[in-house]
Image 1 (tube, rainbow, N blue to C red):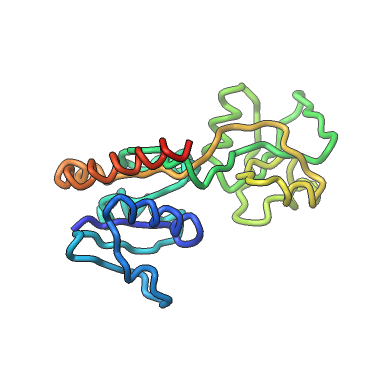
Image 2 (tube, rainbow, N blue to C red):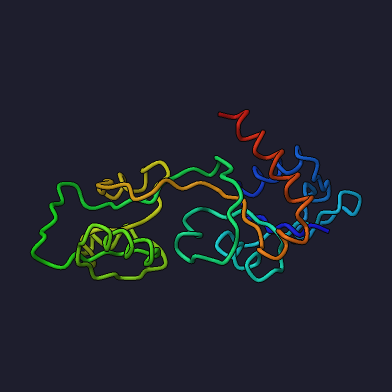
Length: 209
């Protein structure tokens, strides 16, 4: 049985459709219920819905053999997993944003509000900028408005929320998309079904390009 952790929500549903086309279907997952675990013994697959930020934990610790996680999660938490494929979906970017007209004063420490402290820290270390990280868990956009921070580092999809709060992107750090990841031990012991899945998903990704 191949155990698959899928992120709850639109991305997970989109990705499940790809798995389905790859021959790893599980019809019960499409039923309207509140169940979190679904399996199809004939296809040898079991799916479960988890919070997107938790997928990598389930995979790293072996509760799931494979899963789908955003590149942002992989960069922020650096889980011990194999990254097998860029699924070319769930696309967005990690960016630095600030109030319109913001000018960085290099003479003082830059205050950065973010929930991605490691990504922000690595980025600013790479350009040699001294920063003070303010770790927040939500509503990052209001930090510069209330003068809690100079800039924010956050995921930007359409940029609408930034515009509505008079903020703008001043730097893109990295492009983000959904990645297929595997538990290191599972990749060795369940290699045949995993490789079969990867091959089919890779073909689907190419077709969409």
